[in-house]
Length: 118
View (cartoon, rainbow, N blue to C red):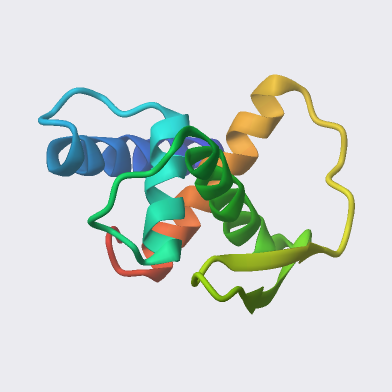
């Protein structure tokens, strides 16, 4: 099976599983999944977040997702427990569709490594 087909199949499986667990079956979009990863990485699962904190959560998730690709490196946790990353390499200029594929690939890898999906 082609790499793109495998990614598509794993992505659909992941979206279905996450949507059933967190959105009563309503399909989660990419941004919502990135947000969930940010909450997971912060580890403060049962609290409300302000608007600017939600953006920071998405930034944390993106850094964590792109860390295995060599773009970011974990640096430290601040006094409030928020992880901080250092940019190691500029992201390449990608078209919107290419960005989406990179993020989906990174998300599938993240949840595969965590044992959430095969």
